[in-house]
Length: 348
Ligand code: NAP
Ligand code: G4F
Image 1 (cartoon, rainbow, N blue to C red):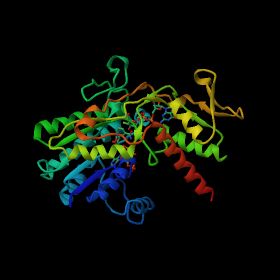
Image 2: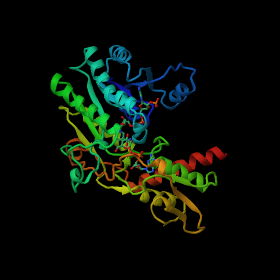
Image 3: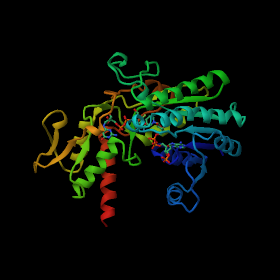
Image 4: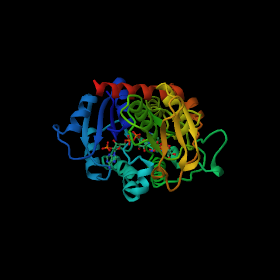
């Protein structure tokens, strides 16, 4: 039986990946942070959700705890998913973001070496399309590939770039089987409510059920290449099954604006949106009732924005045989229906 260790197992991707590896017959160990005992409510919830995962306490900032975990578990594969992953938050706390999202990667790599596992344990690093930055000059028409140039636009993107290059460096320096997945945005029913897609799908459900008046958003015109998280964790696993380590882009090859996501999400709940006004005064209005449902709040603007992300997954499709299964309308539908179900269940 193969053994896997997932850092960030409590996050969106961690949950999907733990389930996938369990189904593939792995013994799954998951790193969580904090001072939780078995009686802690969060620990209990995680155990209920993923009873098949052995939960291990370790912070990405704590090299000793990581090394102990590696020595005890001796995993065949390590998936480093833990990070401060919210781009907007990274502007508010750039130093912690650099420590966790950047240097934290080095801690995991060093823990593998200190445990003497660098020749046997395979390593996955969660790199990101945020490293590209989406600026006109480095934006290929056919989408970013593994060869495209980087120009990160947030403290998060800069920290991730450190994690990316230190992983490449350990591969080249110590012959580690270390691969980076450069993943474009992936969403779903496990997405945190602070990210825009889940914020919208939750608000649509609550507005539809009369539990919320309206939805405040920032930049509606940014475009993202959005896929379903369940499809992307399969790609992570496939990377570590290759004979040779390498870096791969996972993306859909399509890009859509926040505005389009809103329109489709409200439509899924039977509400058509008309847009009125401009700039910060723009509103999204219910086409039937005339009620304002979407407002702009500049608090959600970022000091520097990534305007457009579009990925080219040709290498992953050819080498890994990976392809996304759920398309953009399918993703929006899945998320809205999930949140309608959750909110209805709460109402009883
Ligand atoms: P997520 O839901 O934010 O999960 C991140 C996890 O990291 C959380 O469970 C968090 O723990 C944990 N964490 C944060 N700081 C930590 C620390 N100091 N020590 C230990 N654990 C810590 O992120 P995700 O969407 O699943 O993404 C997984 C990874 O892929 C992240 O590295 C992200 O940056 C990267 N990525 C994501 C996307 C995407 O679209 N989702 C795209 C490209 C790359 P708590 O639960 O306790 O907060
Ligand atoms: O949902 P977001 O916060 O995701 P973002 O910034 O693209 O980052 C996500 O994807 C990255 C991969 O490219 C990951 F590496 C990262 O960890 C994370 O998972 O914002 C998407 C877009 C942005 O342009 C933002 O300005 O939506 C815009 N937006 C507009 N209104 C908003 C809001 N974003 C958030 N979070 N909240 C808003 O109200």
